[in-house]
Image (cartoon, rainbow over all chains, first blue to last red; front, side):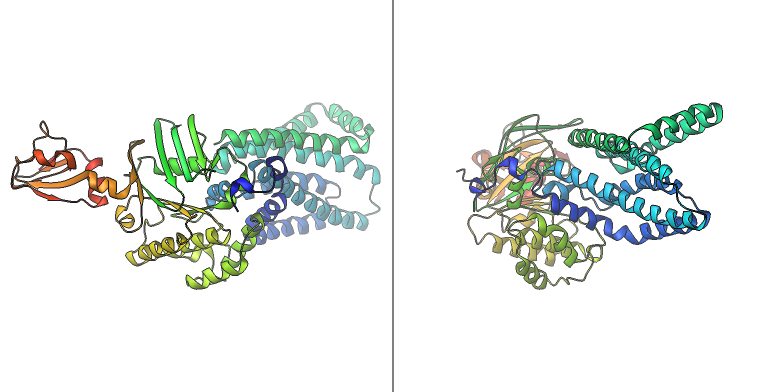
Length: 226
Length: 284
């Protein structure tokens, strides 16, 4: 069959390889699953005995950020750039797949941390639904900020050049919370009060919006990286 | 429909201070050797053909489609590099599981047969393979997804002569179908003597020759004379090497008649052409 007679028009093929790209990202991560699992297990055991409670949700969001860099590290280590370039799939599809896999990992981590936190919470009393409904969307937003900044930077500059930079948003968030907590605790309390007054879906919608914008930027930065 | 597997017309690619300007045409059903010393622009040319680099100007056509083309075009292009672009921990069976979903015509039986034929175990890990085995694995992948065009970037560097000869045999079999074509970049030009119908010779980012291999070999003669037998002010010569007793240079065939008697004149090998065209005058 000649290329001229290939049946699918360009638009139809744009995301046709998404399923294959998702599988490929999982395959790329697979050699690192054991070390990831060991690290997560250590954190979970620690969280169980120290009764993190809902704090585990925030930790899951923060931990998802370095996890998101693993496929980039694996790509550089194994020189996968040529493989990606030679696959019959559009680059935006590969990028979308990376976002979906990263988000899937975060959701899995969150579910696991939530299960551990709930178990720990039940040991010391009943979990507070209001606290959960406030912190879950906040954790989603935190994840979206951290990963939303990290992925476009990694697509532009690669893992080695940008791995330290990608921790910057996390440092900034920690610095702002730490500084505000130390100097104006009422401001921090006000933020949490204000946040708890927002509808449950707000944080989720904001997180999805941020990730969509981040994806569009990543498609552009990946193109710039040549 | 175009009869060319590859067509680069007035293509210019700039990478930092390196400036590549290339024109070449590879008709369907042929093997083209892309030769030249290190840094000549071979890998930049291949990265441009694969769409990894965007030319500043010019036109790149792959299998009749102008780039940028839909990604589905890459179903028909196989890539073989000197080092595999695959996860080192993958087993060869997992390579198939990771890559096959991208290709509508992936041949599972064909992949298994090729692994067996090339002496590769499906349970071996990519990182455990020798360079020769890595090259065979990449060829197996390319043939399993039905590539019509094979692009090989320095596949023989670091290979022993036996493995290089095996690759030549594999390429010969691939070309049994007259719609299959190969672009073979190498600085080991002796690999191309047997198989390349066409040669593109790159030097410092420019095409010095692109055409039939025989045409290139007929265009020059390797000349050996006494130390003063070749006068560069009288005849065009390339890579003139002088010692106290001899002089050797590559001379255009049309100018051989200008040489004095006593010159030894030979049809040059590709290796000799590349070495002399790329080198400057040497006086020992």
